[in-house]
Image 1 (cartoon, rainbow, N blue to C red):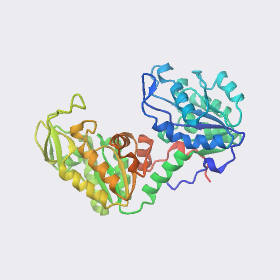
Image 2 (image 1 turned 180 degrees about the vertical axis):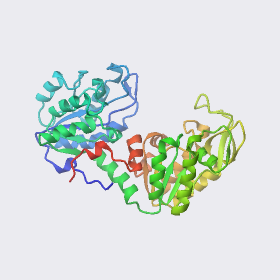
Image 3 (image 1 turned 90 degrees about the horizontal axis):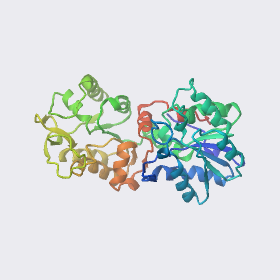
Image 4 (image 1 turned 30 degrees about the vertical axis):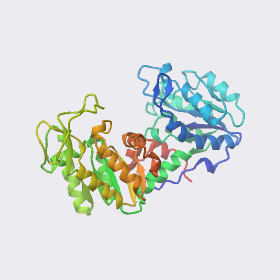
Length: 411
């Protein structure tokens, strides 16, 4: 996984049309952006290309776009935010066709240092299709707009979409560069080093709801780390696999044998596999999810009473997990320890986040819910790296090849 890819520092972009695939999939409420993290993360690459005198063409998806193109998922608010942050006008091409006549004209009129933002790539309806389908034509049209291509959208790098991976084929055919931006470079460096060349002891923490979502990650990380911590809803399947009573807690009975295999694998490899010793339980999942008056109690994780549901790690477990973090030199964390959206059930996730914030280890947060938790709890600036891609970071930790990374030129 040591990936030596061409970056924006490795080619001269002066006067050239450079298409940059960003991750502007930002949350919107009433047409306003509620979290600009992803826009800020894209700025260093854009500013570098502007400074070098490139003609910078930006593209991204936003949302799922299930009901066709609509103003609610237009990138217009992103263009406004980018203009403010770059201190120069970003010319937004509102055309739902994305690469049509309006885009061609906007690019033709560009001068060195200009920035154009294309419309939501998913408005074309072919962005997510397999290369052999009509997404191929869309990728070629994107390539026709530029001389070089830069992928800086780690959050989409695990998808072989037209604007992420397929476009590189056509850019390369005409002799253009296919590089990664600064954000992608940082993700590759931190996640790649953590998995392939960690400073030890290396502790991996996995949480979240489902074992099924993290099967390959657990298997891969057990071979790489020194200690694997499992919390969140997925822990109860492991506890049940050991013969524990888990009440009404979340469980995947089809994965009990897998959990037994992983427990045996950890023992065989001499790795520590830490599971919750005690659990915060309630009569059921909170409704509403942030109900501050939820009645809870603590019991042993392997002796949860019938009718009770485990919803967070207990105080003993918090201490054990925090101690494991304190002894580490490298920590990767993906997934909360409980229903952290609820103030009564957030203590486990807070304890882990606090332990990471206080350690001198390299701390890497694997995107998604754990990234949101760390930021919401005010620990974001204490982490070495917070990944911008939940699904992509998980697949990276699995050891999978990410199409958006591997499509870039090797050095």
